[in-house]
Image (cartoon, rainbow, N blue to C red; front, side, top):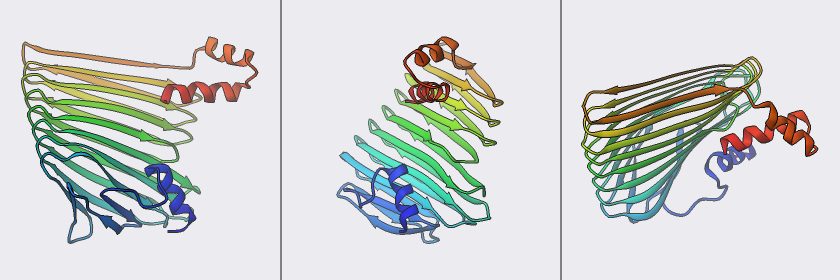
Length: 304
């Protein structure tokens, strides 16, 4: 990899040298390095468009990395990654995609990830998106499909750092008895960037629960749309929260929907959009920061 690819890899995955444990590194539309571990097997698709991951029942404490790096203009990359996590596991999956586009052509990565999480297993999934380079378009469209068995727990931390011109992030989930999904989304847009987040969660099992929290900052003339739909189909609990800071000439839309299809479904939604409070700016100005520095500090703290 060249210096741009190495920099992007460090930004989205946190390493320059090969990590410990299982990993699959994809560069410019091709798998370039792969390693399995005692509990995790990664099987490349025959068509080169993704991987199948199998985690042995009872696998605990392992971390898997599956970063994607694109630094060649004009690549349109579509991958299908399927994860089959056995019962009684406790693992982390570190994903991320970065695009550096210094050329003239649109560059795009669409990843369709499907998780089948076994009974009483716990999975933490971290996904970072990043774009850099010139004015040519950088597009990322992740789709995440989740199937949580009885007692399963899934935590998703999704971050869009900066530089992505267009993104549509879709997450669909079905939760069985006593399954839990926790989602923490952080999103930053600027310039003329657009971002859509679309969640649909089906709480099918008794005792299933979801806590969905999105924090975003929209700058410049960027546009954001947050859609969340929680269907309470049994005795369950669901919470959806969208907090956004709007700046300059940006536009933010939040459409939370909760649907109770069972008398014992307990569902809450919250949405708040507003500008940075004047007293926050004033306080930081008295500490010697400029207006720009004060705004940056507030934004960074909000997205931390």
